[in-house]
Image 1 (cartoon, rainbow, N blue to C red):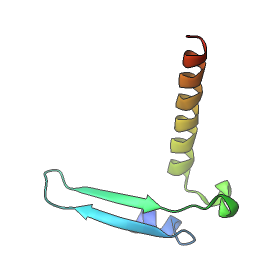
Image 2 (image 1 turned 60 degrees about the vertical axis):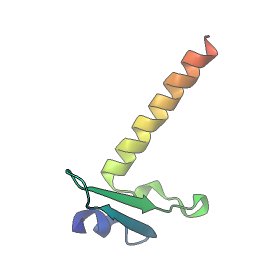
Image 3 (image 1 turned 90 degrees about the vertical axis):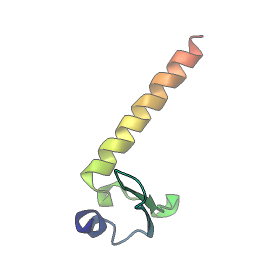
Length: 67
């Protein structure tokens, strides 16, 4: 958790623990305003996740466009 929070110093975030189950869950909400968005500040794992999401959206929109 310290590792993640070290990257988020410039971003407001909220940690929501769910300690009832097995395994436990922790939800981390990060607010990134469009005007303050600077990809250079994002940690590498977030950049990879965003690239994967963009590829998936592109794939779905191409598939739907061909239907």
